Image 1: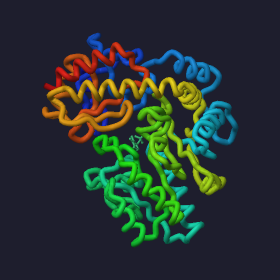
Image 2: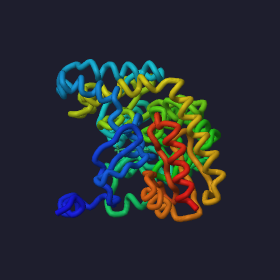
Image 3: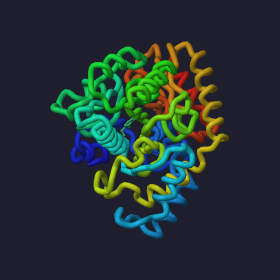
Image 4: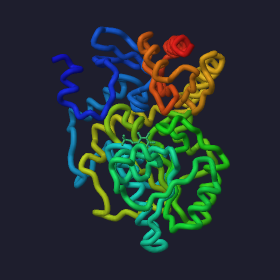
Length: 386
Ligand SMILES: *Cc1c(COP(=O)(O)O)cnc(C)c1O
């Protein structure tokens, strides 16, 4: 059997894959089984912040791997504490809980919110408002948080206590808050899986003010938008807000599994010993890699993200196959006249790997993609779009 047949035989059918086997890569270039090279505009879905097999990151990871790979959370490790310190220093937040994925980071945020609501107002204050068309993960609880019926339908009943407001409609949130006992509002500032929809300033800042007024926690899901992706270290920094909790995962590990719920002063001590845990959470190899990644996301890199973003937007807005471009930084969605699937197939044939989100072509290139390869990739995309 070849690899495609073996995969069909042995792997659960949860993924529709392209007939491409990735065998190696460096930076934004990936190579398939036939030696064909592609410019990667997906980064493993916003994960490979510095592309494939980045030298500095590989060194940080392998140095830790040679020292030791794992211990339990019964003992201290330097990479885990150093990463938490770095996140807090860069954001002003107070404490970090480490898990292994975006879903796990959100689960932690949800547990913190439930406990905070119960302690501050009473156990009936368990409801959490999320947004229609959001995406927060695949566990039963983070699916419940995800405001999209398509993900729910075969898995009912889901965890109770999630209410869905309309994105960019503050009245819809105000109504839910006034009619229900609510402990938190959770949102992505750019709905990634939902189609790269940017939330407006009025809406996010209005929700923040409402949270402050009603003593409701604001949770920002930065799993896709975080770690420099949108041109700021975390995307909430585009708004005049400071959330009580933000969650991060994908780009933090730059290719190794890690997730974190980052807690501000209102909730820094809500969880007590034994309230929550994770066997692999805070793994020293993942954390050593993440320390390297996070310490390299500086003003210079963020400025480059902005410049590359402006370049992509201005080039694609000129392209006659493009209807509109949404998003921020290097998280962009392109509505095309042609079907997005067709555009992607053509781009792949021509040597570029874009992603899809709903009916849009989605771009999440490595943040350090070279100008030369970015220009090449944009020219190929334009060809694929007309
Ligand atoms: C990907 C994603 C998640 C889920 O992350 P996993 O690591 O797959 O569990 C949650 N929220 C957002 C916004 C995401 O993009």
